[in-house]
Length: 124
Image (cartoon, rainbow, N blue to C red; front, side, top):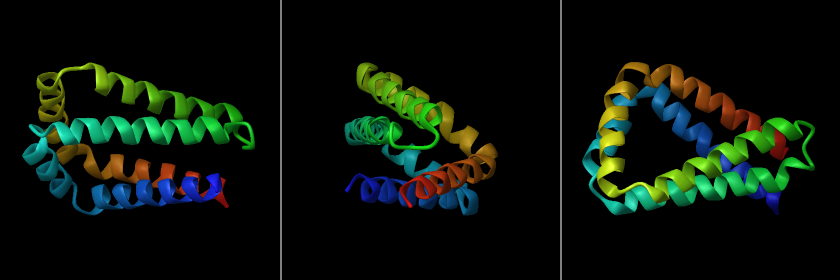
């Protein structure tokens, strides 16, 4: 069951990476238009926490225990950070990241797609 969850998360990470690789400006527009919405902040935090929890849970059974555990813990720390900061701080971070993604979206997308591929490899 956890392999299925990891596979689904890996596929979503690959899809997001490919979107960044092909059209980074569309993700930037999405972030800029919804940076005021509290749903984006809470959803991002919950997704990071869930992603990290799945990775930490699966780390022991993996052949890359330290790497999987480190990625999971970093993701959980990111989720907790997003929950702790205010909505105004989150909006400021998004307004700083969105233009950066327009410039560096393709390399970030390639890295994210590779991370998702690694997660799919772990799920197989």
